[in-house]
Figure (tube, rainbow, N blue to C red):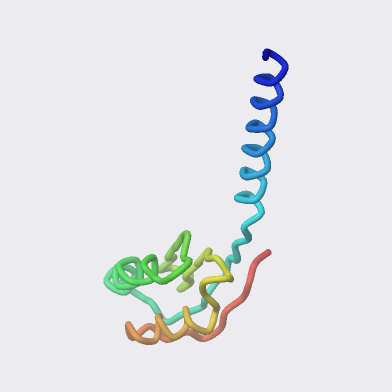
Length: 100
């Protein structure tokens, strides 16, 4: 009986480790958008909108360099749809560059 319980516990631990590895395997992409933002109000518009797009994990706005850095799940979103979301809130995107 003890051997059966030990084997059962070992099996559950193996399944747990396997599940944790699959979650860690999810990939994210970070893209830096060069934009026309020039004030805190523009930054606030971005921070109130873009984090709620599908798959977005993180958004950082840097007003002095006029860049927006977005980390997202590529299975749920793309650079093109994020560019469209930015233009929908009247933020002009000049170029985007993916970071690895």
